[in-house]
Image (cartoon, rainbow, N blue to C red; front, side, top):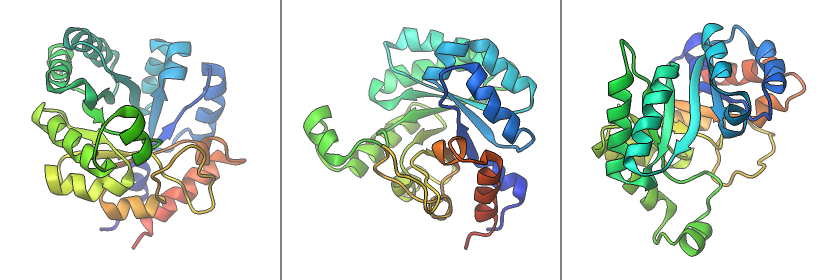
Length: 242
């Protein structure tokens, strides 16, 4: 498969892990015009609020609101309704909340959607989670991949569109849930980039070869001396992957 520059850019989700809208704005100006997704996480959303997301949408960016909702079904249903009304393109919940909670998220989404509903995905296991942590601290037995596949299948049964998982689990998820079931992969590190706190990682082209639909990339872009050059380099890598 050959990607155009626009198709390659649309697979990249730039993680705005900033403490304020002012800090985030500096990065946004540098990558303005590149048709990538913008991922807004808890730190920035709690600081800047819904108006910041609306501003991104007004500038033409697609927005993934990464709040990882995990609560009782009725609360998550209400949260999903509010997020849908905000006009984001994608948001997530925790698969660990169970099928009823995820189904409630979809109920809230459909009830609030007009002509467009956001893509709804579930978090399986964080890419910072090793098997030792999962087994000994979280209390889930088996391998990380087994737990991820179990959560992915549960997510599909609940009617969601896909999951967040590490790139190393993408192929197994696609095999278990079908190629149309979307995968969003953090833990993407271009060659030579710092690993930081990620454990299960791949390069952008490696993740694309696994079949991932979207890749979340933060510090390799946001902490680069030239963020625009960094994302353009990744786009070129995706266009030219073999």
